[in-house]
Length: 148
Image (cartoon, rainbow, N blue to C red):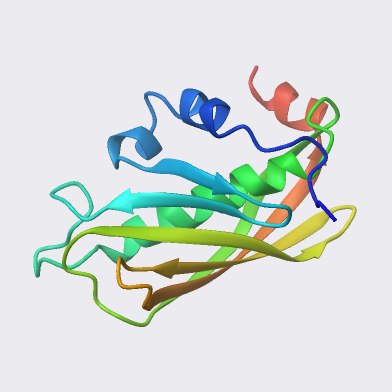
């Protein structure tokens, strides 16, 4: 059984992130299943810290990106927007090369909040980071009204 209100469109996710931090870091949406969304990020000069490891902040940006995209697909986007409330990360293993992949799955999908479990793996399928991401589900007009 699928969790999606509307099926994830990986090409759409790439388009809406053009000219954002997501594009600058080389993050790509690569897979969606009935209850998960996956994005990946390269280990390169954009995402490494001075010791040559993937930067923890880049991991968190990857996690929030895939979690936010997933959260938006389980609500009626004509009526609601999903915005981050809190994210935490535990960095478990250093990544020195290749790509990292973030898998987002829901832990809770309520009327006003969602909680997502995001696990980040290296190219050898080793767990490198775990994140918990909490999202607020708000009426679209609240966010759209904030633009002015």
